[in-house]
Amino acid sequence: MSSSRQTGMFIYPWDIAESGIEAVMQTLQEARCNTAVVNSSYHQGRFFHPRSKTFRRLPFSGVSFMPEWSKYNRLRPTVHEQIAQAGILAKMKEACEQAGMGFHTWWVGLHNSTLGLAHPDLCVQNIWGDTYTYALCPSQPEVQHYAKALFTDTLEQVKPERILIEATAFLPMKHGEHHEVCLLPLGESLQWLLSLCFCGACTERAESKRIDVGEVRKLLSRLVNQIVEADSISQVSAEAREVAFLLLEYPELYHYQQSRLEVVDGLWKSLKEIAQSKGTALDGFPSSTPFFVNQSYWEGVSLRKAAATLDRLVPLAYGDSVGDVAYSFHAIKLVAPEAALGAAFSLHHSQIQSAVDLAARVKTAVDAGAQSIIYYNLGLLNNRRLDWIKQANLAVEEWR
Image (cartoon, rainbow, N blue to C red):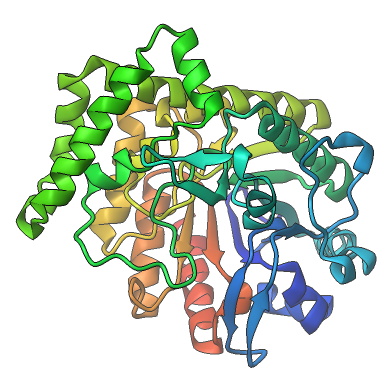
């Protein structure tokens, strides 16, 4: 590595397969990046690729290597066969090593609509009984086994220096699924309440901790109904404060939330043990959704516990201003002042309008102690925005 601070881009393996390793390496080097963060496990979706001139559709959630099938039980990953058979990840790792560039992998754990649709009983289930088929529930023993098996499989086959985990917790109720429609205002407390899981595994775990799940259900049903019937835009702005108010007023709700935090913490500690045994550093996003970092509890993630487990906590610094980016690090340091930090930046047009804008945000992260800066996403950017990354990275080198 050319410096202690890692500057890299998130990369899809299908972009490598399509453009060629040499072209991808050249793009990274021209942008002054010293690290490739290549995805190895991802969800389905549609992706607009301006430079390759395609609006790509990924029809299933899958992995980009051939699994060791003996590791798995009921849940078994789907494979991007052409990517896996071509050995794209191994070839990219070799190219990075030859160029003196870092090779990390970015790993999506439980956000898997393919497996969720096939196994709805293993998914998050809200108070209304709706199944979130995009979200495997981390309380389910089968899901925990799958996550640990896939994680181990990835480390053994991909062999990254670091692995960055995403969506390895409870995904929230707003997801942006195909034709997801809502005509009413959804404030923070309503979204959080409808993100709480009441599947069999979650309720059994809560009951084992002497939480009266029946009372929690009745409470949630009433709260959700009252908020929905209020139908007030003016109330939505106050709902951020309402979450803390409800947790303090209703101990049973607080304890149910704590049970979720403990589930995720236990899973992440298991992944850390696996990573340590393989000699791989474990990094993680505090949330898979780019909301304020202190809302990570929506996904059952405790910032304090996550910082204690991970080798590096990497917030999605996707806020609308430099101040929002600064607050992300402030919030983490309130509960984990010694946390090792990185930062991930999206170059979405609604957030970043210029090279100066991006550089200012990156500087804020660097000043806060971020040891890795990762940009989203090599295949989704045009040449103009790739140049913004170059300018930001040149500025990082000057600040060093």
